[in-house]
Length: 119
Image 1 (spheres, rainbow, N blue to C red):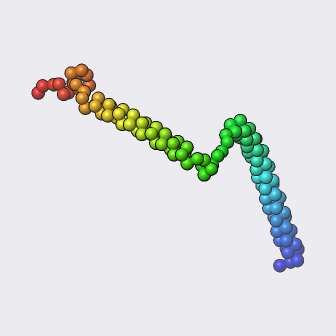
Image 2 (cartoon, one colour):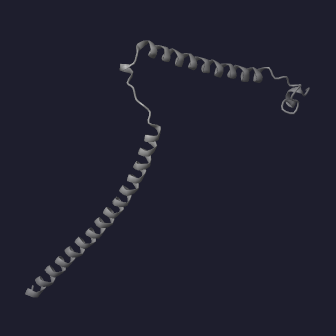
Image 3 (cartoon, helix red, strand yellow):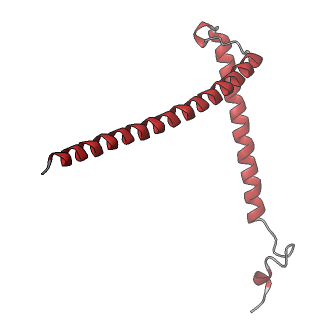
C-alpha cells in the first residue's frame, strides 16, 4: 500500500470524526435550547401556582396538636354524614328496584305488549 493511501485513510477518519462531533454538538445544542424553553414554561406555571396558593393561604394545623375531643366530634360528624349519604343511596336503589318489580303491564302497554298477548 503506498504512503499516500494512509494519508487518505486518516484524512477521511479525521473528517468523519469532526463531522460526527459537529452533528452531536448541534443535536445537543437543540436539546439544551428545548430544555431551556420547557424550563421557562415550567417556571411560569410554578409562578401561577404559587400565586394561587398564596390566594388560598389555608393554615395547616397538625392533628397531633389539636384537642382530642374536637377531633372525635369532627370524626363522628363525618361518620354520621357518610351514614346518611349511604342510607340515601340505599333508599334510592330500593325505590328503583321497586319500580322495576312492581310495574303493571297494563300501564305501559307498548313496552309489555308481548306479555298481554293471549295464545
